[in-house]
Length: 67
Image (cartoon, rainbow, N blue to C red):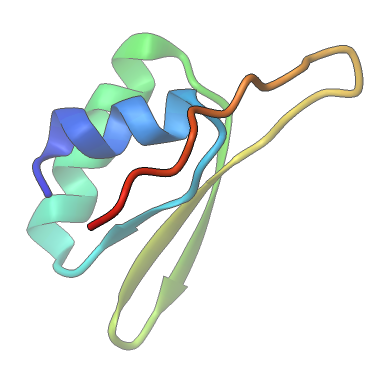
């Protein structure tokens, strides 16, 4: 999955996974540009970017599509 697709998923309220430090760096740049509020969970095998939602925000999730 490419950076823009991962960012779009985060904007829809879904978490995104970066499997490498390079991907994490690219995601951080996009997150910063868009001023998204996310929590980054760094593990030994990659990083998870989890959207932070305030109580007054409502996320409209897209219907799941088959893989």
